[in-house]
Length: 294
Image 1: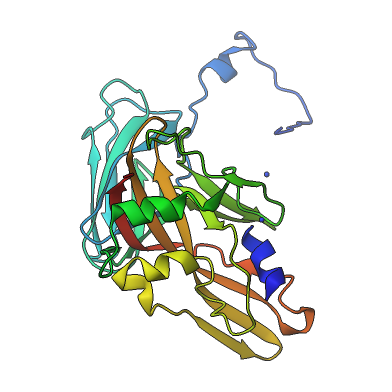
Image 2: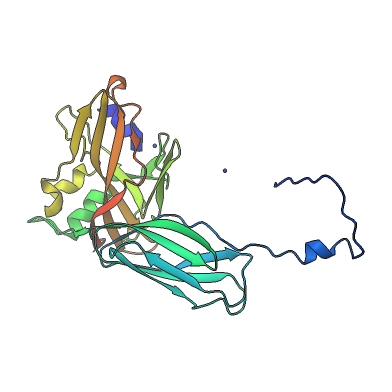
């Protein structure tokens, strides 16, 4: 069990030709008159919540053709997608997409530019639940708790560095806590905040492995009080549906957000969970709240 804490406290083209061509024209005429085929630069899969919007998602075209239209369509009604401008008036090869999340699920987005096409997925998750205080808890007690935590240096991996959270005497943050990522064995997860953990919490054998990373907040927020993840074992493998806490804040600001992500971990039971890895694309923002240091 103690070892589990260490898991997250952690891609020339060469061408040749034979024969000869006899031509009376300039030898460069063929190259200069060659028409290059347009292509749509790949777009990463996208994630959003119900009723959320992704704005200004860039689409870039290589070898653009003047006045060519870009169309964007979804294979279902989980999202709506719109592209602009209507056509490539100036051969810039630059378009933007606006994607609206309507229903939970995954949609396949197809982009078409002339005769070429490209696809990417958009996954819509349930909107995160708002965090509210338990009885006799407030922003002052939340601030006191945060001051007792340690926080990551913007990277979550098997090797990690934690330090005391940087809160000034006037209850403002001493540095930005904006982004974190987990990057192990080609699995990369992105989080909108810095990962924190309790400084003095000692892991006990009866602790819930799926929510140990939000231990201190369970007494503060109603929604987390009885929150438990799920651990399953089958055929020598285990899966842990875990909850992990993050803080999003700006330097010199009193305002901050608490973010609770749901993440799936997998590994072999025979190695006592020391090889557990996060599952690609498994990070889901489950709970969120905005507060002020007091």
